[in-house]
Length: 445
Image 1 (cartoon, rainbow, N blue to C red):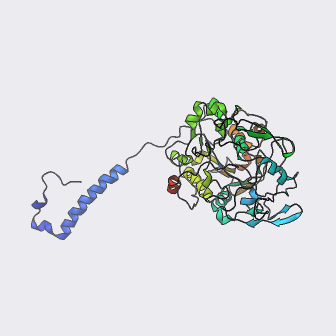
Image 2: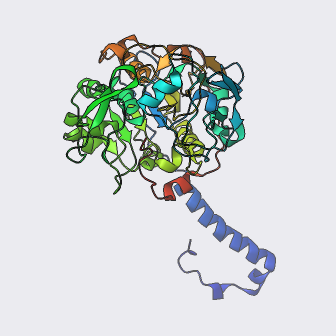
Image 3: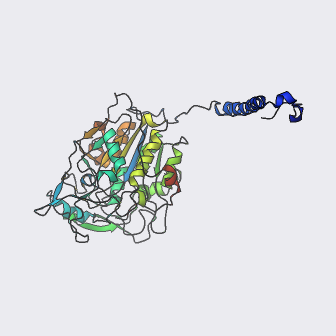
């Protein structure tokens, strides 16, 4: 703020040079500046308007967010969680093996192929998890201590933890991600043997399909054309986005839709598959949360053994970003892990068909309508994520699995007063997550 017209500092007479009066004049000038700044900062801006608030739903939920992490079982992550079904030991053949603690970032890739599942499952005996490529061989009989994954325990304690969530398939990450969006995998039960996850794989690449008694049949090219829940959303005019790590020289983007021909070669791929995955941390504050959102981490934030151990912070900050936004009151967040990663779990899965069920993985449901401090013992599977979307938005089923899977309703109480969000403590800040370079797709097994 400048003095008014005609004012000069030299025109101050001697009496005005009193230190008290000079201070008063200076204070008035500074106050004028402050008032100008305050006036500008308190100007009202347009109120937030959710463009998807009027989408028809069967519940108060207008936004569904699925965060898919990597390679953990329920026993490995929630050992000793109150009121949940976890084990303190397992069987290696007929020998009891105590579960021992292991750091989140320790270890390496354990065997989690379809044939490995068959050996570890052992017709429901759950006694074949020891692996010859690890030291010790009983390394899979391990659990991650609570203090290593505290954000997950906090979320599970505040909201709903599911201790009967199973893989829909008995293989590794690739088929699990297909069930996440399509409730099927075209009978694929392994990862493709090329360096891509779908239609852009190199010629001659294949993905094995399920065979009898834990065997694989000769593979097919990993490019399918079955319908997905995204197609149902498109038909209904409901928005969706899929956040995924960017392409690298070693592997393509880790997107389930990379294997769906009509999506990969269509406008949906350009418009709705978003890289890098960290963009969700800026899209939400910018008012760009779609009705249905999938969030796939890069390797270092995936909880995969042998990585940085920043997965819990990544998940916590995605949840915090939603929780602090105007979207919180109408959002349901499902935190899941795509496959068991070779780690021990003591609950034998039901046999539904040739593809599954696979082993238990953790499930955390976060929402103002999630049942508070609740452990759900209802059977769910990866396809239940599709079923929930279909049920919530009034969409038809895609096939047998999503038509028969439980729809997650046990995890919610839509009559309760929506819970105010409490920020989840995380060791890594949002700013650091945005600065970190991508470590590439989350998994090759």
